[in-house]
Image (cartoon, rainbow over all chains, first blue to last red; front, side, top):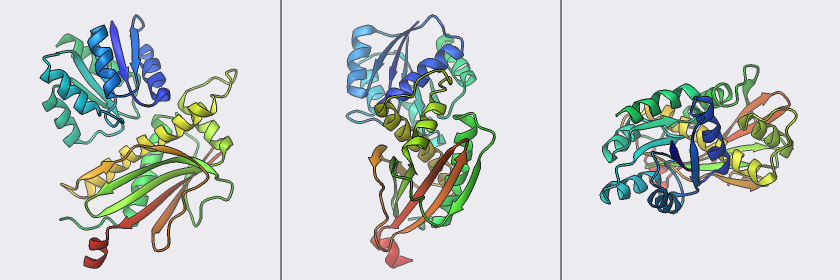
Length: 121
Length: 167
């Protein structure tokens, strides 16, 4: 599975990668990006199976990135991994076409459950 | 327009969020969360993040000495004892990310107190030194201590001018 991880924190990208492994996703080819703008380029260039994206980032936020992708007709499976998990944000993410929103701090089981559901859809 | 959230509610949300973070992200069971009158003298760096509502600005700062920042970063990264300390750039990054996650949890908790209140988080940043509250700005300090770590979470609260007049 090809996964793009987008977060402006290098430490958080490392934690997301580790959590993917702990959740049992061991055969994963990860490409990283540090903001929405770079993420957009990476997604267009590598056509991942799944995008795991932060919400608050400089240059282009996660929700702006998702909206741009959907406007351009890109249907890649997209999940947020973010520090905010309010109902309002979950609804906004869903309305924009996200498969899930995982709030930090998270556990490997959160990844397993959300990603399995998204990949099966 | 909703009322200003009292500082004590921001401080209470901060304590709860730190506890959640210590257990959920740092994997700690043995720690203490108390209040303090002033930020520890030794706390000379840390991660900060602004929170904004329509009526007030709040700055959340995790102030600690470099040794505590290093230990917090090691816990966040789940480094083994045999692994070297992360470089300073990653310690800065980790402290900003810890501030970010705690602020996200604070936002959820405070949002539960006021239905419909719009709360926005800024981007986290790392400071060498300390952000001190300006005169007239109310503040509270939540002290987190665990396994050789002492970290003061500084909550600085500034109601917007119109809100102060109305209050």
